Image 1 (cartoon, rainbow, N blue to C red):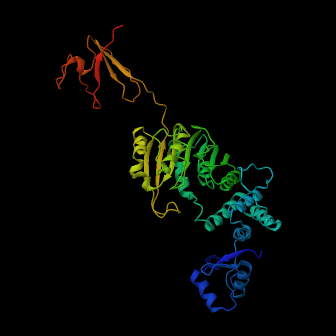
Image 2: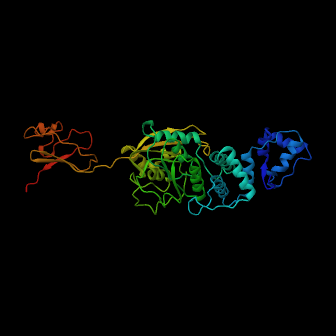
Length: 419
């Protein structure tokens, strides 16, 4: 084993199959227990090789899974400034095409020693390249859970199932504008999506997502780096469905630069409502009739600042359901998140509705509704109640200002202009 591979007390307990308290007891009772080689007083780190040798000498379990052994070697080479670069290099080694894979721009490839590359190839041959990548990603997420949020696989599978048309397989591209490591896109590929479109502000995480999709091989992929709100990489209405677990609580999502953007079809979100901006961005990329599923914080459904956007989403029929998930459904959030299910609206027809009433023309220019065919007039007066009574209505208005029986805002009748 590589002398640079280190483990914490919690990881020693997992290797030995005991609790963390047992490791603390060993350190107090056994003078020959390995000394820390790094870390802090609160979280010391020990040499993995020295610890496993000591465990074997004490007759204890010291079996290290092959994937964990490889991960420890990779972790010892990790650059703190680029935590995901070593995972990108591992994925390229497992793919076996380091020179021919097109990764997102600015995604660095960290060189790996030949010994580590050999261990990666052996792991891929033993478990399969895709499965080996998933195991290494699991260790990476466990080590960086405070910096990176990954959607749990059961939740991702649920979201992919909910956006499928009537439970059938997806037949068009699926978009994730904040894809991270690509868990939602992989779930869409498992649901039958033929292609996956992704974007993430961290180019190295986008590269991890691209490698996972390539290793999985069930869907074509196009994953790029960059901020999806400020530098959108995909055209509007290009996806059959969309999945998104956006970042919560962004302080500056670019409202000043995007004030007149075409994506705000439900009103411009306030600066304090970045999640509603992600909702509209995601929905704008779905073709009419397609569905989208977005994870949202519970506060986004009740904050007064987002009332206007929420009202438009409901009024125009875009927001179809809100599902409250139990606490722990998303590992990074202690409170339960909400799952918003949305449907892209069809193009609305805006027109002025008019109908002739003898010498009067009925106008309702404020009504935003599709034009419906007018009923045939049966005589000098049309079929409207106000006209059948000759303008004499229950409210007692004159024929010049006939009342309307429609429950919304009453229209007026104005004289038809003679030409």
